[in-house]
Length: 635
Image 1 (tube, rainbow, N blue to C red):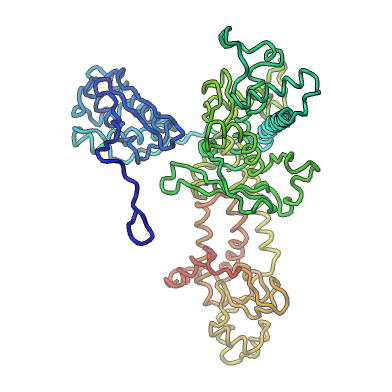
Image 2: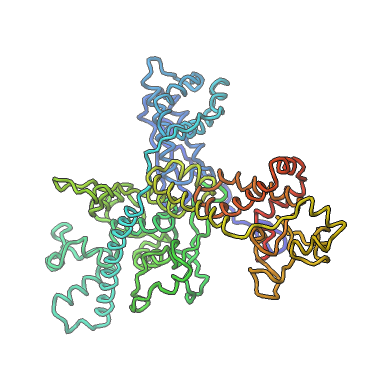
């Protein structure tokens, strides 16, 4: 840190400090990886069993250590394992060759091509190739030919459309099932915490023995994170504990179970559209700009998406108004009559986040964790027994297997044998469904949404095409029924020089206004305004502050041939935006002005339009860009 005024020296390690070696054992070829998140434990990757020569194993281990060094692009244990797995696959391929290379100098471009050949038709093959080449570039001693192959552009990614979104009804079926689990968990945990408070307050002293013992057991579980057990009988729970239920029932009396945590994750992904890893690693710390009194309630959470590089940290607002809600829905949420502390809002990101924050708080405090997700995992959860913050990748499948969630086809046509096709629930498809339904980007650009996510989705194509077609038809109808922008021709402009009174009367203005318009004093962007204090978009007598795009159908607007170049530039820009946003988004935002501008250009004629496009000046192009970026809007 700067030592200038107001600064202080940065903390430095003591004299003689040397960083811990990451290659744990050169002979055994083990590499120690330390995740960026201190909550994740270090992990060792073993290269000793690889079916290549010792020099290659050591070279691969050194390259892996350099690729996963602190401060690099590989920051999590999951990313490090993917890098390790891809490199191991390449080593297995080399080991199966008749004459495998023994040193890095013997590696050739043919080895890379041979490894990639069976993977080139898989949608993830090109991604793995890029991952492998990035790691191999860390090798020492490779030939110039091999190094040149490692910097060549990767082939285009295979376009496979097996990943599909859920239909609207399937998505609702999944989210409703998750809401049922979450609501039951809230009722159970809140009820047991109330029993615990009453027991600690002495209110259960006169209650039946079972009620008193349950309060005593809850107190023990809360303080020890376990149940009372016999010391002389191994780890068996005491008799009276077993009589009240199973160990898992007792531990989840005050804490969420792994499956319930999965239900929370389903809801948060389904309601926010964020990545699985971003949601599962979400922090419990957040900011409430509404001061806990606002309507609607808002929580700002700093989410982390490492793949975005320098833009990885995102301040994401979670509101109590669902993303699909209308402007008045905020007044109808949480009007159930229940006290605020007992309300359960499971239709908004804020409601689900707040409830999870509340229910996991005791477990979070016990672990000293800052993570949002903390739950008790029993046998079979895949992450070990006890309080955990890490999910097993099979958890969504385990959650889905507990619910009867048929596909739309299976729900409409029950099978004769009673067996119905079940929905395959994944976080990726939930996020894709959110993108499909909301048609707006989440932690990516609109171009990425259109070209990378929705273009590969075929789960709801017919319905989506119908919605887009309907929206386009509605916007074109609006354009045909609204007033057309009044235009002055070249003949009108010429006549105005000799008979301004007649031209002014013909076009609904006085002579002074006509002269000002001809001088360019009344120009907006796409035309000129002859009466800005009598606009249909403002109160009578008040200056109009509406977007200049509304001039296309305003009775106060007039267009002259001098405005045609800007009209052509804006029209062309709207057409080009079709490739940068989703079809539905384009139809909703740009179809109406595009149709209105197309009408203007049609009235001007193809020759005039071509001439205007050719003579447009850099200043006009810059003005059109600023206009479309909404830099000229007054409100």
